Length: 357
Image 1 (cartoon, rainbow, N blue to C red):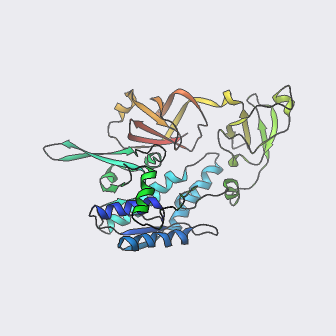
Image 2 (image 1 turned 90 degrees about the horizontal axis):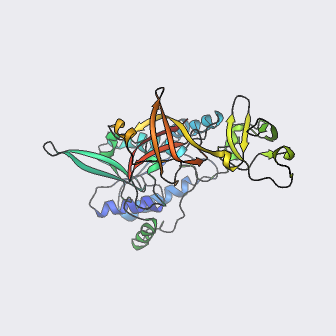
Image 3 (image 1 turned 45 degrees about the vertical axis):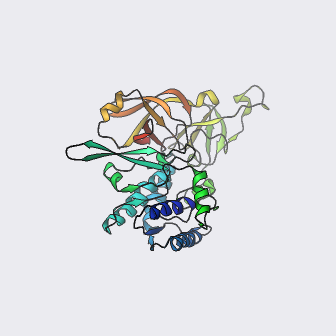
C-alpha cells in the first residue's frame, strides 16, 4: 500500500486491513527540497502504519523522480508545451518503479488511495479468463482516472483502488471513526510529490526570462512577454499589452485576451479574444490503449474525451489522418494545450489516451 501521509491512502490501507489483506505500508520519498513536506508526510504515514499495526518501509526514488518527472517537466515547458507531471508520475514512479518493486518482492497487489476503480469480468467461461477495465471513481469531484490512463492492461489485475466506490466526505468520516491522526489533514495540492508551488518561480529555476513579442491573430505586435515557456494555451494574464489602440478603438476598454498559440523558435506569443481561443480539432500522439479493439473505438458513438483533469466529458470522433490520430470535438473548447493529455472514455470506462500535439 502506497502510504503518502494523507487521509486517502490512510483510509485505503485501513479498508484493506479490515478486508483481511496482508498489508505493508510503503512511503515513496521522491522530493526533498527546502519548503517541501516530505519529512512531515513520512511521519504521518508512519503513524498510520503504527495505528493499523502493519509493516512500514521507505523507498528512496529521489534520483529517479528528478530524471523521469522533473526533467521531463522542464524540457516540455522549454519546448513550448504544457506537460502534466501527475500523469508522468503515475506512469514512471507509482506504477513504474514502485509497481515493479512490489512484484519483484512477491507482493500480489499494488494499492493506492486514488479515486478510481478496476473492474474484472469473465471473458471466457471455459478457461475462466478475466477481462480487466479501468473505471472512473464514483465521486465526480475527486475522480482521478484522468491521471491513470497510462497504466498498462497487464497491470490492472495487480492493482487495487479501495476508494473507487467512496466519496471524499465518506473517506473523511471513516478516518475520524477509525481514529486516524490524518483525518482532517488538508489535501495535497500542486505537483505530484512536490506540492503547491509558484509555477513561474519554479520554472525560473531552470528557464531564463527571455523578452519577446506579443502579437494578435493578424500578426500585429501589441505587447511584450517574459518567455513563451512561462505561458500556457488559454492563459489570460502574465503578458503586457502596450499598443492598446491596435487592439480596440477605446484604449481604456480591452476585453480579456488569452494565449492562443506559441512560436518557440521566434519566442512569440499569439493572443486573442474569447471567441478566437476555441478549437474543435487537434491531433494526439504517444497513445496508450487499455482496450484491445482500437478500431471499435474509432467508430463508437459513445466516445467521450476529457482534455483536462476535472474537465467535462466531451462527445468526439476519432479518425486516422496520415497515420496520425485526429480528434474532432462536438463542441469547440478553450484551452486545448499541447503537452496536456486527452483521455478517452465510454461511460465510466477509460479506453486510453495520449498527448495533445
